[in-house]
Amino acid sequence: MTCERCDRPATFGKLCLRCAQQARCDIDTKREEVNPMPDVIGVIEKNVNEEIRVDLCTYKGFDLVGCRIWAKDQAGDFLPTKKGLTVRATVLPEVLALLHKAEGEARKRGWIEATTAADIPIAGVDGDDAL
Image (cartoon, rainbow, N blue to C red; front, side, top):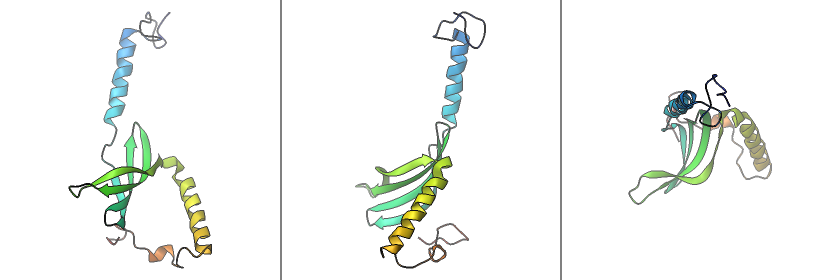
C-alpha cells in the first residue's frame, strides 16, 4: 500500500511516516489558532450570584457565539456553568430569528412590557456602558 499523499510505502494507516508527521504538525498548528479567551460582547446581571455573558471565540477552527450563565464561586470570581448555548457563528442568524419569534409571542402573552429594542441600552455601543 502506498501513501495517499506521496508514493512512499504507507506505514501509518494510509500515510507514510513523513506525511503522518506533517499531518500531526498541521493539527498542532490549528490548535495554536484557538482563541482560549473569548471576546465578551456583553453581560446581563441575572441575580446577585449569576450573570449572562454573550461572547465570541474560535475553538478548533470554528468561530463560535456563546450565551452562558456565569456564577460566583466562594472567592467571588465568576466561572462559566454548563447552563448556556454555544453555536457556530454561521447558525446565529437562524437562532436570532427564533429568538425574535419567541419575543413576539412573549409580548402577545403580556410577559414583556411594550418596549422597543431601541429603548434597551447595550454596553459598548455608541460609548454607552450601561447594563
